[in-house]
Length: 278
Image (cartoon, rainbow, N blue to C red; front, side):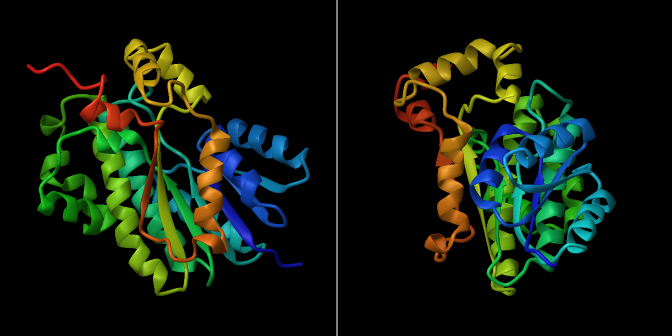
């Protein structure tokens, strides 16, 4: 029997929380570069009554992305996409972050947008980091949004000599996610579908715990301690936002980014988290 299909890329806590909120009655393809991670999330969801299947999927490879989509189409129409895959600044090199978080996310949105069913919806998970860097020029923003995916990593301002460190690469990647969602919303709209972005702040996940224990650990702990909310967020709170965006209640919302960081970005610009003047 044919089912609506959800694609979940990135076998982590945020993606799983959203999939659990929205994926009942659907075939859920759980993709991750580490098949063991995908199998663990798939098994957890399966034990809660969801119909899941683990897939090895490398977000940096168009061939791998297309393979996951084709596998999902064997069960029915692609109705929902959740891209929660990515690499943090403490996990990878500049080149790897750009290849996965920036290029790979652009390819996934493009390829899913070619087949998304009418009435379908997608969520890209970016980060508050996209708001935590100086403004790019209008030309740079447009390039991040509209450059053909296979040419993105050739942009001059994305060359290694123009990127300070892995955090800068991450910030650029997340800014690109937000701009790419705006661009793809136009194409998805031609199929009667929508796509939006959620930019979380510090959310307690295994990836975040890696950051807490990494070289920027004190920076991140200080960030959530001094944000207006006074705490990190939870994956279920991100699922609350996704539920609005992916359901019919969000039918007028597409191409948007929802910043959900407990007010950390507000404090960064106008509060106690402002960087010291040099």
